[in-house]
Image 1: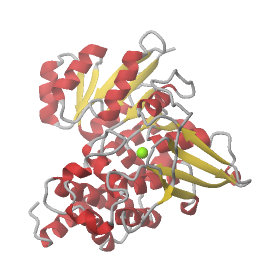
Image 2: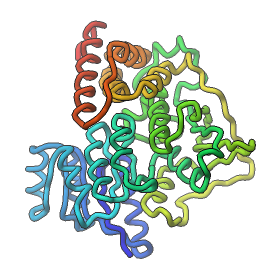
Image 3: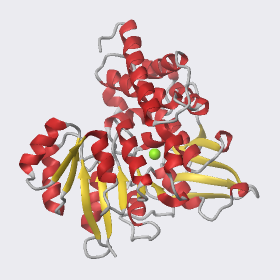
Image 4: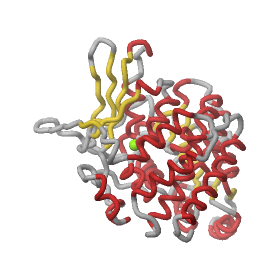
Length: 386
Ligand code: MG
């Protein structure tokens, strides 16, 4: 039986790897690509539409949609977050891979869940900013199959484990390019140093978020929602080899771990084919494997604590943290602020925010807009043009 896919964020890192899996598995597990979406990479999307014979396409806005219609006549072309939501709920789609970057991915996640699709979730903002909405829309526990490596690991480790048997779970972090530095050295690090991740090739924002460990705080928030785990039961370990992705400590003292080579194709293909398992793209060689774990140094990663606190406060606070981070990371990458100002700015914007409950998408979107404006005001006060 073939699985009919909608791949949203098709030209990003995860989307491309997913399409590689589809190409590689032609003739073994049959996938049919029904819908594809990309933000502004119109030419690449048009080429993919031709290659996979896709009739439903989505792009960022009306201008891109017009260009795409000229390149792929006869295809349905939709635009914006609502367009993504339309693609995610097409009747001919079984599985939606949401690999869109940013909070614009939330409507598509909600639409996929409400339409009963399996959601392979790589858009972490869906859970970070809209966790409560996503959980309300989820119709069955395994309807969301996580793609993020740590959550893909927990998804496997926790299956068949009763909640009362779990003492604590751990997700790992490589520690990013600045692991082992002294906090005061971070004032002079450059964007290109922050973008040189030691293990994972990823997009620019998530790479900087992995240097500040803001990404890891987002992942704790994701785990809290996805697996319904209390905050105090989710720990983070610095693990530079990025081979163990998560561990589950059970009440009897057993610790079970998931290991694999750090290669996103493994969780991507696991999500696309769940509950079946495919031959691996690469295997882990165990002899001689040297694994180390360290506690997280809060002084080196102040952004982690700031964002985690936003998660604990809940409501609109995580949406504010996410939006402020996005604005501040962009300012850092443009060379306008030093690296430590990302964490400072997030904490300052959060300090000005009184979280409201999240009842609808509009609550999330309002908090997002407020936080972006507030982060820009903060940048202006520091004397950085935005
Ligand atoms: Mg991750």
